Length: 262
Image (cartoon, rainbow, N blue to C red; front, side, top):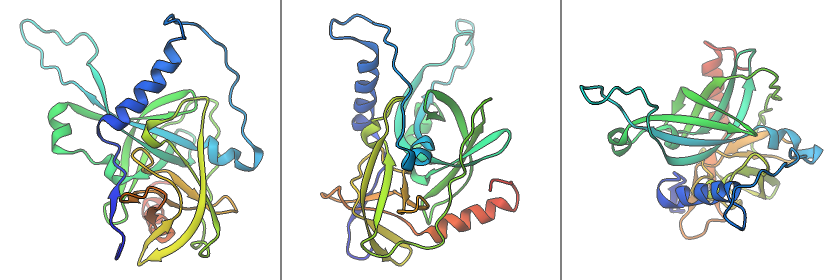
């Protein structure tokens, strides 16, 4: 960006972990501190936004402690799993056996510190399901990362339609995200704003975003994907940024030559 100081929405540290812990605590404990089994109805979506909400993905980067067997340790027990970051994503498409998820590349990258902590894996939560996913391809320039995971029996995702061009400045856009790791099977956070234009191939939206919003989808009024959020303006989190749809289309076209994802 030329005149906008921005930061990547990485989702590192206590902000993400705190948000995740709060959600888990709310699900586990009642007001009396005793675990209570409560039956909750499956979430019902507004028909207009059903596909956007159904294709939302909550992503968690996990550190799995590496066990080296010796005379005293057998490594028979499962390794300790520590969540180190969270992000958002969107199901682009699915085949008979796999689903393909788009998110931000800075979330997919593994830092040197993370490598020291343990083996890093990415887990995707979609509704009430969860699965490990792997990286198919990425681009640092556009901050895009394409993931794939196994498709479960009975799952049926609608293919996310890509816009052919960016909206006009001032047109409405919609964002589905998990800021600060706020996500659960029974909730979806949806935000709206306006398209504000592009500087070169990086585009700006008046959509609130913070850590954990990385990789969340931006849709135009026709429900077509126009970008994903990868950064926000410093000290003013109601301005966010993402790559031009050209980058997303190029990434998909490149992968499409080897894997049938669309």
